[in-house]
Length: 498
Image (cartoon, rainbow, N blue to C red):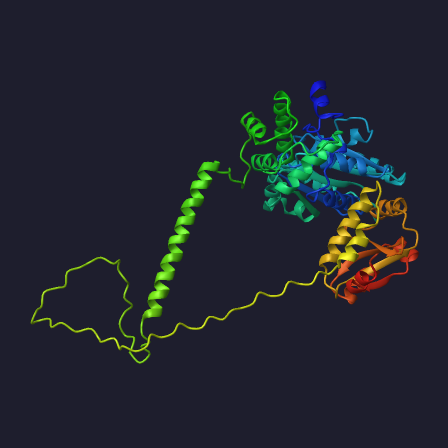
């Protein structure tokens, strides 16, 4: 293993399948999901559910969530889905420091409630995270619902987060589970990664492990990994690790489709529900040829019919009583013999007039391309603001840039403050505090260049009208109501000030 790491200049293996918070990838909505979970947990939002396919990153998300929660939060992680309704009460109590007992469910629930009240009185909060919740018996899930009812006069005594496979959604859809489902206030889904996201994910993991050179995995190799893994991070890790080993064995630093094919051959992944195995390249090419030929034949047939119709004379005055004639293939047929009983009817003479002109085709000009909402110099000024080593600030600045590039001028936002001090570290500290009070994805950071220096405008939310923004401002936390003097700004004004 040491030689393998030295070969690539790595400090540690980059593609371990065990959850590791230092390797948490915040792309592909993972970062936004984490922020949403933190907000829901810290604001007494009832039961929260996170579902996703096997290997889509749920457990890693859970581990990072536990690490990011404030110090005053006690976390209980339950990884055993086979608890009975009494056992789950004892397991939570033991994690909170209460001695184990053999009390029945009702007594255990009272004892647990007393412990939670004690913790709440000392300023502690408790969050229970249940992994593999899809495999829990219905009786145990019903006990989870009863646990969610434990509360003080104003706050929940226990916050619950359920992590499970898509079967969890199916279990909650049952009529018998409707009471539990009604208590779920937020649902998140860890979706598979797209090919572009796989490339970013692989690069991120390599850099997090200490790699500093050019990209090891070629674009073609990434495409093969994305298809074979169905975008699931655990499978991506397995394939990338085996591909790196294959490249190491071949004494090369570059991972190409050849190494990926060897990794795929050495793996035996079960099919993912709702996905289709990709066709072999040769079969795919043959299928494309067949589809192309069929499409081409259909176009030619349509063109032949159109030309034939265009060559017929206009006969507006002739009554159209006969049934439409289906044109048969052009096969030579001998004319029938003349008969007295069935006199032949001569076809109507085609008038030798000038052939009708085909209708003039109206040429429709393509619509003009929309003008960019941000000018080049505005984008340059936004990109010129240095965020330093501050991940939250970097993330919010990228989200702000995207929103300013797409939101219409008539939208409104709530300006929280405009600061002359634009030090990135100071703004990062504000964002760290803000995520405990408001949904961080709704906070926008807008640098305003004033000569060589920057001011920093911080705004909240994007709303369809000024009235909607004004109503939202009334619902902001009291701490913000007291600290800031809100100003409602249109997106046109915000862009113009950059």
